[in-house]
Length: 441
Image 1 (tube, rainbow, N blue to C red):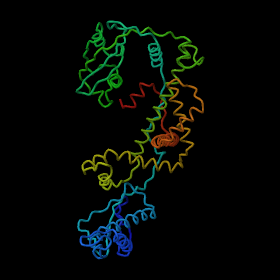
Image 2 (tube, one colour):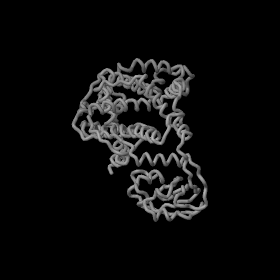
Image 3 (cartoon, rainbow, N blue to C red):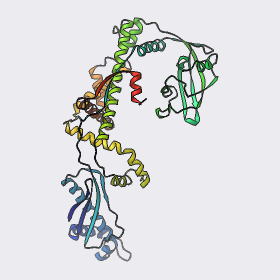
Image 4 (cartoon, rainbow, N blue to C red):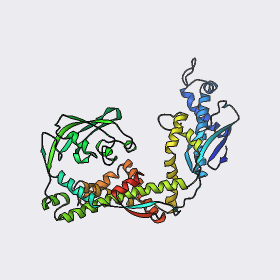
């Protein structure tokens, strides 16, 4: 058998395989002999059919099966021996006039290659690493929420200006149906708040989403409107009142502090505010890191130029998956996934350039830390090592979880590299300013 590669361009090639009779005739003859005792042809006893009749009835199918086996194995070994770094899998070229009886059979496969490129992690950029601080407004608001959450809710018949209202916002046409609780101070306009005053359980109040809140993003919280829609949405929503309560704020005392944070860890209002600030800024740091990672990804994708075997990949997309795609559907799918593919290749190059390797110990440590954070959110601030290790073992026995967590470990290590080499500009902002920067508003 003769195998060669024909280059089309830097990322597209064709593998050409010439198969001769000697490559498959021995296996075909073996299969024919194995078939003879089982062959059934009218007019002959089973096992007594002449060989030429067996070959006539079964030979063509056996020949094609054996040739396919020979070609598939040779193709696999050739790709391995040539150390080809492929995107997708080889696609056989279709020849409607293919002659299986020819002395020499030619098979051609299109392949798409991973492009060669370099990345410059230290290239000049305008990336910003945000340091997000919890200001007094945010901290005081959180103190009020704590007092309200742990205070006593007293049901009342009619809505007053200081009441908390529970109910459901609905606009079926726009897919809005969300149960929520709010105080009247959440609305931007006092006229809107006044629509609720005096209403009772079962009453319906209709408001318009345009300018409903001081910040349009609050539509995401109270109505579950997707971010892409918050600025343009101007529709009426019907709110059905389901409960009305006036809260008696909880007293900020040692009993409440111990309940929230554990015995003796917080002893005063000042300690409480310091703890709120610490916890909030730790959470903000995670969000800021995520934004930094996304910003670096966008920068590298935009500034790392290389060609992809686009037409090959579009054809390949039509062949994979349970549902075969049309050419038009594959075009859409490629456009949707191209950016992710480009960063996947860039990420691999960055890992190699920085000699980053992920060990099982890395994965265990990352998982353990994530579990401790989750347990702390539910009030378990001091789990034992045995408890955590038991949960880690169960989590890492699930291959899907291992894959998901491994991706997070890679992202965390890459983030450390990007912080060091991309040298982003550091900027201190409030959380409100960070949200505005994150959404480009």
